[in-house]
Amino acid sequence: MKKSPRSPKDITVLRDLARQYAELAAKPIQQERRKLWADHFSLKHTKTPILATYGMWNAWCRDVFGDARMKCSDPFYRSHERWLRMQIFHDSIGDDYILEPWIVQPASVKGNWGRMWGVTEGNIPSGVDGGAWKFDPPIKDWSDVSRIRATPHEVDEEETRRNLSRLYDAVGDILPIDVPRTPCHSGFMADISTSLARLRGLDTLMLDMYENPRELHRLLSIMRDGILANNEAAEKAGHYTLSSHSNQAMPYCHELEWPKPNSGPRRRNQLWGFCAAQEFTLVSPEFHNEFLIQYQLPIFERFGLLHYGCCENLTNKIGILRQFRNLRSIAVTPSADVAKCAEQIGADYVISWRPNPTDMVCAGWDENRIRRIIAEGLNACRGCFPHIHLKDIETVQGDTSRLARWVAITRSVADAI
Image 1 (cartoon, rainbow, N blue to C red):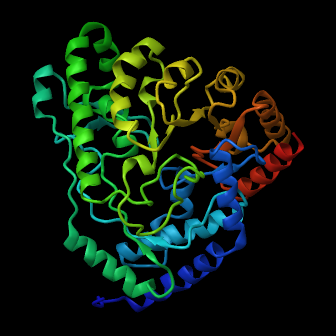
Image 2 (image 1 turned 120 degrees about the vertical axis):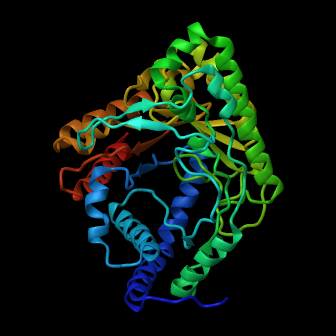
Image 3 (image 1 turned 180 degrees about the horizontal axis):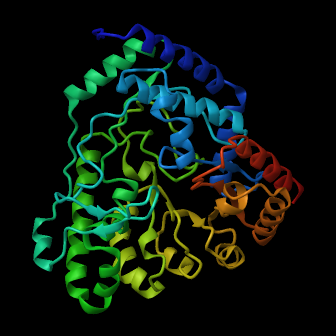
């Protein structure tokens, strides 16, 4: 492969981190975790898997892993430095997160967040640092629907080769480099719910279900068909691979092939899919079914297995989710009733229980509170297949050690039940 110009300091930093990461990813514990998740998601009783996830959307991560804390000067190398540092840090937490023995350089796939539908999805900031913004939707009048276009599946192969060459030149002899070409209309950008609220406005959407159902159904049909066309083009191009798995946890099970770098083409029915409906959390089960699930079904039933839910309360919607023939995992969120969800889900699906991060690590540290809440939740899930997923960790109040301590406490409680 043709070599590209390199910054000696940046390369030295990356190579050192890549060696550290490769050593951690090669530990036998990673294979043990793969089997744990595969058994768990294949509905076999195991010890309770524990997972903590976070990213640069969280305030504490921006402090700990922000540009000022990185050593690479080139933004391209800095992004990989950040990823490696976050992965190495994650190993210290001690949860069941898997460090895969490769590094990722995504292909340059067409599609930018905020412009996935050919229009600008605007917002009005609050003026307060970290404050909530208000939607400024581009579809203010139903005539604006004529401007909506799903992003076609396209890959800039020249830019992809250039980026791959730079990373290969830096660490290609230390770690394999995976180059996923998963289409942009995947996950949140395929669940319709996320983009719908941005296109129409959340408050307006609520009224549309009553006042403009025909126009709303027309918009939903356009979105469904656009996403399907994008996904079908990607599959035809051979761009779904074993890197395209997605289930908001560790995408392993015994029914599907396990993640693998540069696996070559796979069909959607060989992969995990992820779907959510956060914007519909306060919508009735009837309207959730009519104005969302009926449009999500054709998109996500094409996948081998499906996880449904992110932060939305699905307590009263378990019944309508059963329409997904490939459903395997359901999110039980901080606002959900764990006992009621567990009673309805039983042993039919995996329960991805997400305890409130405020109670766990974000607002003070109370070990007794953690133990009580985890014990109550797991007792409510007896006979089910739960895992515990701590996510949306906005702050650790300057104490990153809380994450490892939380894992240790949670594991001790889970092992005792």
